[in-house]
Image (tube, rainbow, N blue to C red; front, side, top):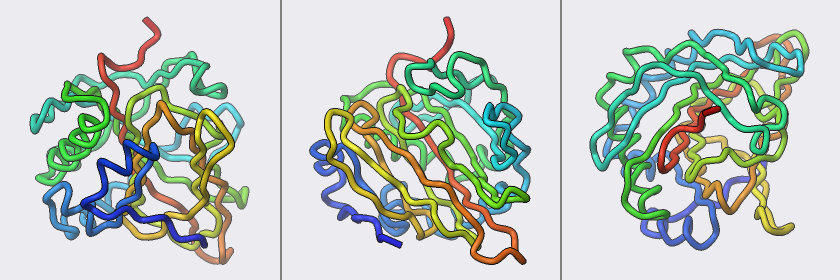
Length: 245
């Protein structure tokens, strides 16, 4: 596995602004959000109860997920009534143009003492990138499994942008998998990099306007054990949530 190009904590804002991406290890993420690593590790149980994604248009059964929406205004983090996830076909050729309803994130997760500080801390990254404002945040808890098919696709839509300002991809767990390589490319040219997030609670931050990204399929290392990759993906958008209206 290619290790990620870690960003020094003190260089985060400059790196994200200049390169369009940054990678923080778990220690830097917990420092940024002022939460203890043990608080984040206690969230693992929520990934054991993710329902299947019923909207996969490629016919696969490899993805489980839940979804929630929030408004982050400085240090204030407010949930909004449960709503559909929607993207235009411009940003998601496979699943765009339809309202996708997913089961909500569990209250025990979103009410946890570490949840609001985490979202607020990444909101500060978005504000450093775009200027101080309210952020409309969608949170996606994903589990990609290999299952009976022997392969799982973290990004079945391929290399893409999400139609937001900031994307945070937090690795929650990797178990018994190979693959899952992250690829980040300049949206305006061929420059890019490839690496594998392996440390739980490390995070990839992306300026969605400047870069496109994808993650390669996963396969099991041993057929005798479950194989999966868990992530928490947070997207920050100025001006409102994406919608069909």
